[in-house]
Image (cartoon, rainbow, N blue to C red; front, side, top):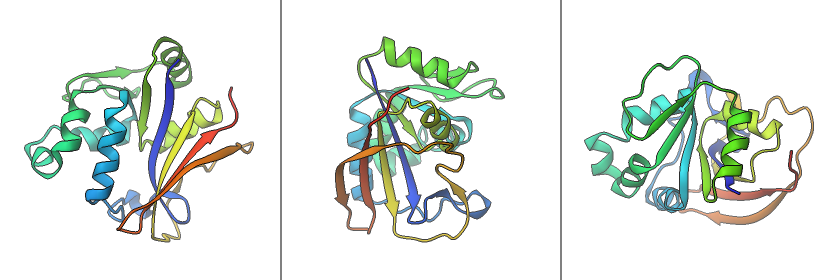
Length: 187
């Protein structure tokens, strides 16, 4: 059975994006890139919501991405990708499948059929939906040292709490802190 890992960058006050959908406050440096490259090396497939997918698709296949961060560009471009969207009609990013069916149903099937790691990058709404159904096995939250005061919360619609166990903390020179949590609950 595959392990589903949700990775996202959040502010100290829990937002994955600021007002007007800004993410310019994310601290992306060599430490972060090394962490991300390591995460991708263990992945069998990357899952995205449409908005995050389109941001990534616009950057990672570019020559600029290979110049700035080949350690991430190589694996992210080579890996299988699945984007959950009812509006996308095509993809220019190689190895991408556009999935129109219900994410919960599809992810349940993927977890049963695969053995490796499935990784969600960003994709706040997808993380919210899969959390609600207790499908995420591990949360990797990269906390950036900023308080935004407003934005979009990572978990705004949780009807019930979710019990987690801390499995790792790691401090980065930028002030970022990686918090890895394992879910104690299943669907």
